[in-house]
Structure formats: C-alpha cells, structure tokens
Length: 126
Length: 429
Image (cartoon, rainbow over all chains, first blue to last red; front, side, top):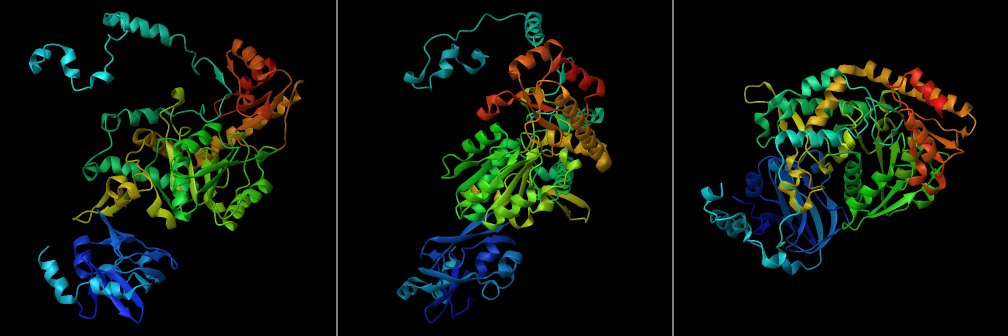
C-alpha cells in the first residue's frame, strides 16, 4: 500500500534516501486528508532543517498544515514546480509531488522512522 | 430586569471583578434627561460645528471635498447593504460578495495591479499592512518611508510595525518630492520596502519609475499609497512596476465625516497573492454551473493560519467600499478622468493666481495634481483666521508637521471649487 523503498514519519512525511541525500514529501494518506492543495510554503535552498521540526506548510482550501522534517541537514534542492502546480502533491505524492532534498547531517536519524508496513498499521490505527 | 435575572441590585452583577480593580464610587454622571431635552442638548452642541455646506474648503491633507453623486447614498441606504455586518456564511450572501468582487475588479483596473483585496480600514493601516507583508516576502526587517508621505501615515506605520522587530526609517524630500539620491544611499540588503505616496502629501507627483528602479535594484519592494482620483489622470503605479499599491478610498464617494469611516485600498502583484492580508472574493460556478461568488484563499487569514498569518484583520470596510464601487460605476472611466482634469486645472489656476499676490510664492517648481504648497510672508494661522472670517477654510499649516516648512501652507482644490470661489480666495488672501 505504501511504497516499500521509503521510510515514514508519524506526521505523515516520507523519505527516499540515496547516499546521504534525503528526498522528502507527504504521503498519500496526508494528501487525501488535506484535500485539494492550493499553496505550499517551502524553504529556500541553503536553508537548514531539523528532524522533528516544521520546515514549511501546505494550504488546502480550508486548512493549513505544517510539514515536519524527518531529518536534520541542509536543503540542497526545492521542487520549483509546486509553486505553480501544488496539485502535483495530490496527484503524485511520491513522484512529481516531492518537496525538498536534504543533505543529511546524521543518517542515524533514519532508524527512528517507520517502514512501509509499520506506517500502514499506524495509519489504520488513526 | 434585575428582578428577572434574580439580582438584588446592579452591584451584584459586578461581583466577578476582583475587589482591587473595582471603582468603589458612583460614576460622575449627570441625572437622566427627558428625550426632548437630550435632543436639544445634542442639537446645541452640533450647531457649534461649521460644515463644508457653509465653508468653502481649500483644505485637503488626506481627507478631500469631492462631489458625491446622489446615487451613492441611494444604493448604500438600501437596508440589505446598510444594516449588514460582515457575513459569517458568506456564500449565502451572493449580492454582497458580488459587490465586493466588483470593487476589487475596479481597484485592480484603476491601479493596474493583478489583484485587490476586499479593502482595509484606511490608507494608514493599509501602509502598515503592506510594510509587514513586504518584510514577510523579502525576509528583511527595515522599511524606508519618504518624509513626503502623510505624517499620520508615517506615525501609524511605526505603531503598526512596533513589536514585530521591524525598523522604520525616514528618507527625505527635496523640492517637493522624495530625494532619490538620499534614498539610494539609504538602500541596502536590509530594506524590505520603500514607501511613497502618489501624489505625495505635498501634492507633488513622485517619480515612480526612478523610485521603483532604485528599490528593486536593492532587492526591496516598492509600496505606493495613492489618491484614487489622481489615477483618473496620472499613470498608475502598476505601470511603473510597483509591488504593492495601497491608498485612501475616501475621495471615491465617502464624506469627510470628521475623518472617517474611510476605506483602505490594497492591491498587489499576482506573485504575492498568498501574502496579501484581508478578505478576497473570488468568482466561480456553483453546482448547477451558474456564476457564483465566494471568499477565497482563506487559509491566509488569521482564523485559520493563526500566528503565521500576515495580518489579524478579518473584516473589510464593506459599506465604504460599496460607496467607492457605486461612485466609480456612476462616473465610469471618462467621468473619473473628467473629475481628475477639473481638479488638476483648477488647482493650477489657483496656484498661478495666488503666486501673483504679494506675500505669496511657490517654494519649488514640481508637477502637482490637486494640492500644492504656498510660502506665505505672514504666519499661516493668521492667514487662515482671515480666511475663516470670510467663510473660507484655508490650507494646512505645514509648519506643524515639518519644522523646515514654517509659514508654508498646503492648499487643495477639487472639482467642487468654482472659479468664483477660487477668485474670492485669492482676493481675501
């Protein structure tokens, strides 16, 4: 149900890891709960993110939600397409709806995150 | 009523208030009066006022004596508009929303900006909001405001931004307009925006193109506060690349009324739409495909975004904005242009004639719209006293706000002033 190559947070973000680079987005469950996403606030490249702390926010029609970083590090890339097309997050939350890429300071933080199975059970219990 | 709620006396209702905070003495109020005595008392006080129905007004400085067509009050006094507060189930009030959408559309067209909100309270607070918005967009915390902007606007700007870590600094004027060299020297990477007024407080037309270029080359936004009547004649700030346009909508169909209620114009470029404060009405279709209006982009607002919102405003000046909408509809593009031309021509005629009089001169040569500055040999207070004896309301004593402009008067001539009235002013001076 949830991609197996990703790791997940309790606040419904996912992480895809390649070497020490972590791509971050929100899960299908999160985008479903939010409804149509109309705006997103993301940090600029060069900004710092900390595990467990919000790095941006996403607006749906009637609500604003923080996006929490799963890892600590420096933002090296931001998905520029989302400014004009925030609906990509609804359409492809794990693909074209990716948000930021972080150069991780401490990859051991990944051990705190959930696997696809653990996340699926976590979501069912919501 | 006390018996109905089971309270023995009125003091019982105040028992919740801690003792140390209670007044513990009766209020110093006179005894009640019969209704007709109250009416007589109020009428007596009101009769001590002299209004613009009696006085010929050459005073401007932020509140302007323009003609208000009768159709404005005819529409405003409809109880659906007059008694309505801000709708809490807005989509059920399609008429109100449509009128606000029309207002926004007209303001956007007039200022040549992409989007307007449903209005704010007045120009002064709109400037405050614009400064806060500019700091949010740029991530910077200094605001440069021209001394040629209204002194009250500058004071409110400082009040509005205090406590937010925003520093407001003033930049000077020379020969009636903002000193561009001084501005360039003051601009650096800490400045979020430059705030100017158009026309400025002294009536002069600011060089917006140069100001926009100076601000943008330092990475700062340009905020322009307008007189909407002037936009009937002058190139709008949007055409010069202004980032945020604010202004005072009072000249569009609202009376001077002791200084309010007025209406704050707020418009900006599309890039910044998610940072704009206040309400925005959008046009859409309903479930049956019919045209419908809705409040939109609501997650900007503080009832949803809370402490991360740009502003805590959650209302607009609906009735005064409606007056502006009716005024602009009644006049149309050509009518507004005509009003602006009359203001321009009459003000220039007045200035020319006044400067012919001994004891009066122009302190500088600068393009102006409907207000201008005159230097007087006699103190302004003395001149105004003589004018008032002749039922003429003279211009503002600029020495009260600008120490270097002692004995200078700010005069305003709108389309309401006749040639006879202007000639009489010149004669009495």
